[in-house]
Length: 279
Image 1 (cartoon, helix red, strand yellow):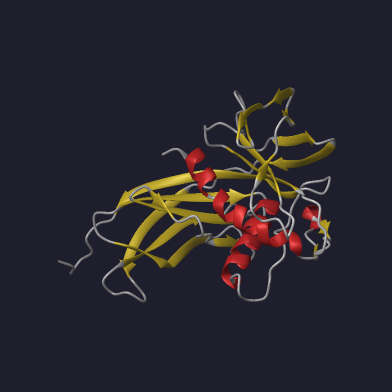
Image 2 (cartoon, rainbow, N blue to C red):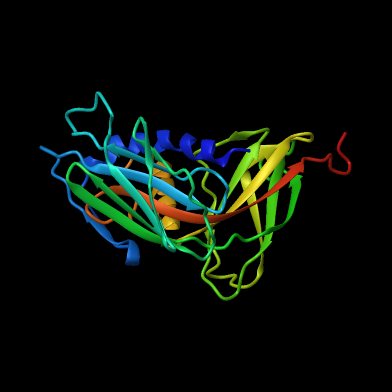
């Protein structure tokens, strides 16, 4: 499975909120992720939007750079061209290659858990950046199925893993059913109440049938990355017709929106079995 393609699938969500969010004044308090965004509804200048994630998965490292739109000009999304994009780690300084459509791609970056990565971007005479540490992956111990809590003719999935005791951990579970992935499913949790314990995460709102091929991916997220996904999740749950949400928290300096995130990924593949008593 090419996780790189899955990363790109999530961009439509961010594109939607990129239209909506810049019209809103918002103050984000997020510890190390703290950034203040205060935008004038009547006449707003486009803001650079950066989205990139470093992981331990052996895929090309990709940075996408676009610009938010003025409230009164929502006809087009603009991508950022001719930016200088550099990733630093250990003694390596790599300049990413522009591939069009706002995408900049690495030719040699390797995600190493425990290492620190710094992203530096210069675009339109502005400079942006962020630094993250890539968390260690947390192995999945078990995956099993039980009759659906709300749909008795289908199955819910349960994901078990052992939380590392010496670190704060922030998790996201991603599910692929027959190679299909629901981009707006977040399934976020922390180890705040279960530090060092065995965690079994039930997921009650995704359903499976015997014979389905399921891949479970457990992401151990860097803290600001978790807060970013939490902001996106809350915005989706609120919906566009309810109270308007703010921008998801960002760790980027220089006034950009978006995220330079990191996670350690482990995966577990299983074919859904027939349960006892089921024909």
